[in-house]
Length: 82
Image (cartoon, rainbow, N blue to C red; front, side, top):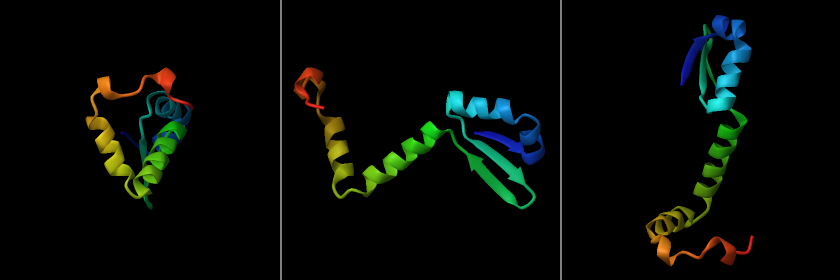
C-alpha cells in the first residue's frame, strides 16, 4: 500500500493514480480529519465480486471443493458451454 499525505497526493496525483491503476496498489491518503483509501477500478470490482460470491449460501464450500479437485478430473475448456 502506498502511504501519502493529502499535500503530497495533490502534488503528484497523476503519477500516484497511475501506479494504483497499473499495479493495483492501494493508496492510503492521510488528512488531519482522517484517512481515505483509493483503489483501482479493477481491484474494487474484484473485492465486490468476492463479497458477492461469499454471500451466496454454499458457494465458499463449493469453491474449496473445486480447488481440491485434481486437474485430471476437470472438464476441458472446450467441453464447457459458456
